[in-house]
Length: 237
Picture (tube, rainbow, N blue to C red):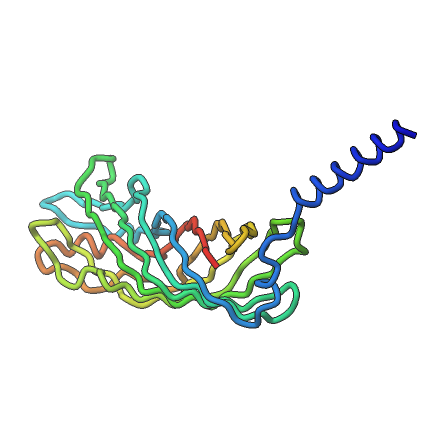
């Protein structure tokens, strides 16, 4: 009898410990029609570059400039989270914010010699409209997929040519991106933390047709620039 009581106490204590260990945190957020938060993260900006291979005449020689993206540089983004519950598994997300970053474009001649390097900075105003599909909750985490469109306006685009900084191309400010990604919601005691990876691809050619009067060969060497971003975000809701 004594052994039975001891075994029963052990089973009860183990069951209680397991329930405490896997207690569901912050369940109410899954049932809120509308909730808010903020997001911070890091990004790298890229260009999908299509060279024009337009010749440049220099004396008796016919030369080409070939643009190529240099190593990716890290950037930063911050924004506000607003999430509308559509169903148990779907949310509509609007995350307005600011994204900062830089892209370094190298220009080579046709024999591979470096002709010039341009540092192109961008400060995007982001207006993303996204649909979030959430898998069923597993204890205190929940994987999800996300996708949608993002309207971006570049406030730091090159508005003027700059001889001192060797800026000989301009960018258009407006672009529409499609975005896809995935992440995991982690339910903490008083808030939800989400880690998210997202790939963002611009749909428009963002290089301006305006050419520098002194160095038109740089703009003429580019057929199109398509902007791309890879983003790592941390949402606090």
